[in-house]
Image 1 (cartoon, rainbow, N blue to C red):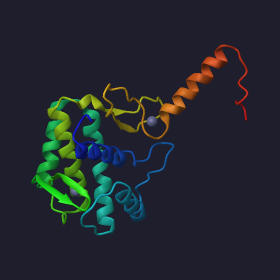
Image 2 (cartoon, helix red, strand yellow):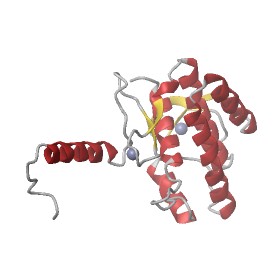
Image 3 (tube, protein in one colour):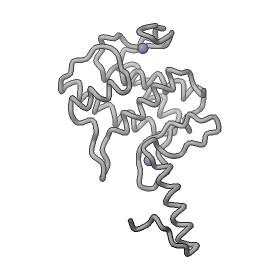
Image 4 (tube, rainbow, N blue to C red):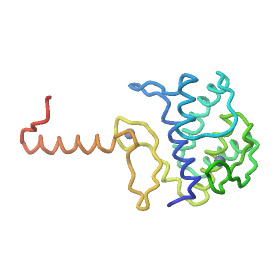
Length: 191
Ligand SMILES: [Zn+2]
Ligand SMILES: [Zn+2]
């Protein structure tokens, strides 16, 4: 484990949130309240919900802020942004134990708005990343045609592709290219 368990979970869910934003050839997957419900369920965010458009828009508005921090790669810039998020969210770190989770850190009240809790949780995780000098673990997918963010939690810092299959896709493409160069006929192509 590179970071504490809750930090790693928070970084993964922050990446998941950033990656819901659409691209040129992929629809935004956080454009409805139902999609937000799904996201909250998938990433097991607990606490108060309002299920209205204000909540949805606030979460959507958080994405570019987090994306900017994720890709800044400069500790001074990230520290400034993290401090802003913590201050705006009135963060107050507390050890808590709830449901089936053992002691972990919360820095917001469970009644605070969802977007505030998400922002502070991501900021708290980035605190760990900055103070351990591990910003290089916050990456963008290495595939040329993919802009998804990736958090590299591997011991040997080897993760380069996002979760949505780019690693496999690039490997398969490279394999096909090698086969094509070698002049062999790929029985699986052209199907
Ligand atoms: Zn918790
Ligand atoms: Zn990718």
